[in-house]
Each structure stands twice: as structure tokens, then as C-alpha cells.
Length: 336
Image (tube, rainbow, N blue to C red; front, side, top):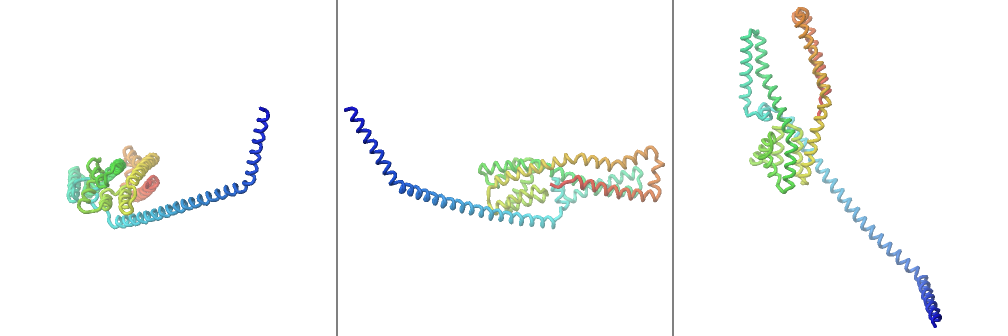
């Protein structure tokens, strides 16, 4: 009985397996057809999705290209206008005094220079100097030395501005990211910044209060601080006001660029210091030799100053020395 049951179960199992195999064989073609159709539908849908993505990406690229071209055109127009304006206007004595941060009017500055030259001329007369030498001292001390001192003060103030300007831009970036508008960020620098950036941004705020827009007020900063970095800043503000965009990111990039420019300038200065020292030694060597010869054998060298042929030799030597110094200066000076 038990053996008969196992035989029946085995027969039933084999019959079911045979029926299933037969059914699969009969339905195999339709199943494969449905799978292929489903696969084609998925590929078509994927292709449509890919085409949509490609089209959207193409539209985004075209929009970015148009925006980039618009920004480039705006930048070129702004640079062209600023270059034309700077070519037409040369810095006056009043602008130089403003750039140096001196609270003097041009009349007072000229009066101080003339008084200083007159004092040295009187001192030269008292010391027994001839008239032409005293007149030369008056011209040099009254007009040459004050201008040299003014240019030195301007250069020193420009360097101080370049040292502090990237830090002020970083403060502006953090202020804008925290939610403050641009005008409040400018007021923050004008109130809590370091000199000379603080005073220049205060002028921007005062110009804005007088009715100028923020881009125009920032562009006026170039008059008192004639640096390319200030020009970059005014261009960024002008483009942002015209085309929009992420101002904090633009100012952050500008701050990074300014720091890289300063590093490059310092690196070039360090690499050219040896050439500058060599140029200074070579330029001073003839004068040192002339002084030593005069101290040891004055009669031997005085013929250069008393004989007309010596005057010609001194004149030719001065011309050649000037040409050599100018050539060395151009070789070791780099614009960044």
C-alpha cells in the first residue's frame, strides 16, 4: 500500500512536470515577444527622457553662453569708457594731494614748497654759494623735492591700500552672505575698516548720499586711488548691478585674485632684487671712483671740470650712463 502510494505520487509529479514543460514550450514565443516589447518600450521611454535631458542641458548651455557674452560685452564697454575717461583726465595737484591723504590745498602745498626753497637759497647765500647755484637750489628745493615727497607719500598710501583691500572685501563677502545689502556692507567697511580703505569707502558712502548710484560712487574711488584693483572692484559692482548674479561669490573671487596678484608682485620683487642691487652698484660705481680719485689726486681729475674737452667727456658719459640705467630699469620692472 505504501509502495503503491509512492508510485502514484511519482507518476502525478512527472505528469505535472511534463504538462508544465509543454505549456512553457507552447508559450515561449509569446513570453519572449512580450519581453522584447517591454524592453523596446523601456528603451523608447529612456530615449525620450535622454532627449529631454539633452535638450534641457543644451538650453542651459545656450542661456549660459548668452549670459557670458552679455557680461563680456558689458565688461568691454565699461573698460572702454573708463580708459577713455582716464586718458582725458590727467591727475592734478589736488588729486595727488587727495591720493596722498594730505589735508592741504594746492595753494598751501605750493607755498610750503616755495618757502622751503627760499630758506635753502638763503642758507646757500650765507654759506657763500654763487648766484646760479643758489638759484638751482631754490628750484630743486622749492619744486622738485616737494613733488618727490608727494609721489613717495602717494606710493606708500597705495601700498597700504593694497594690503588692506582684500581683507575689506572678505568682510563684505561675509556681510552679504549673512543677509546684509550691499550698501550696509559698504557702511560697515566705512565705519570699522582700516585706513586708508576706511576713508575711501567713507567717500563712497558720502557720494551715494549725495545722489550717486552705488556703481558710480565705487567708480569715483579710482580718482583718489588710481589702482587697477580698484578698477576691478568698480567693474564687478557695475556688472552685478546691470546683469545680476551672486555678488558674494564675485567679491570672494576678486579677493582671491587680488591676493594672488600681491603674492606674484612680491615674488617678482624678490627675484629681481639681485638685479636691482647690481644696477645700483654699477650706476654708483663711476661716481664712487670719481670721488675717490678726487680725494687722493684732485689735480689729476680736476681737468675734467676745467677743460672743455673734459666737459664733453662728462656730457657723453652722463648720456651713456642714463641710457644704461634706463635700460636696466626697464629690464627689471614688470607690470602685473
